[in-house]
Image 1 (cartoon, one colour):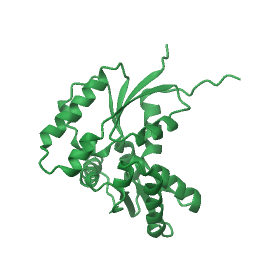
Image 2 (cartoon, rainbow, N blue to C red):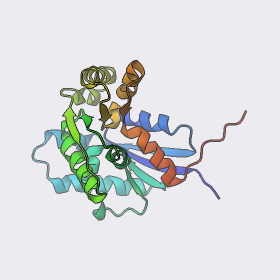
Image 3 (cartoon, one colour):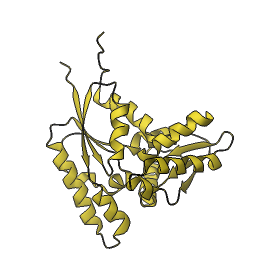
Image 4 (cartoon, helix red, strand yellow):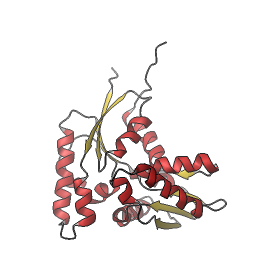
Length: 227
């Protein structure tokens, strides 16, 4: 018998909740959100933070979420994903990483492409994971990586409109005819979609690829809407 699925979501910032809730609103799934921005602050500002301590913190969070009777755990923060040592986590439910469906999508693109970030602390870990993914799947990529400077602190301060405006302005200068551009972070999705509406230029984002993956992985049905 089919039962409503429950998804535990680990975020580094409250702003990510809205993206997931809105994207899954048409589907028969309940999202439980767990937010801890403290680790992100430590990773980006504390040079003395030990990698093992950071890994233990992420593992502790995942194990705590798993006790909430969830069918799967979603990690929306690419920095947390890069820190994660999954083999050391005692969790029985699937762990869904937001970047893996995104990697699958962009690794199938045969043309040169650009991946944009706003969080400098996320770049190295994400690109290392992307390279590992392409190696494991025997893919080759022609990728240019760019970071939008002085943007991420805006979203961490709750200045979302200013953050989106900065991304849109950058996209306006980066987009050229037939250029393939993606945004690597969930926090960048709204700005990317707004830019698409303004220009009709497609910007690949990790949310669209993620939702398709979650629906298929958890066999989620659409909500029944009664008249």
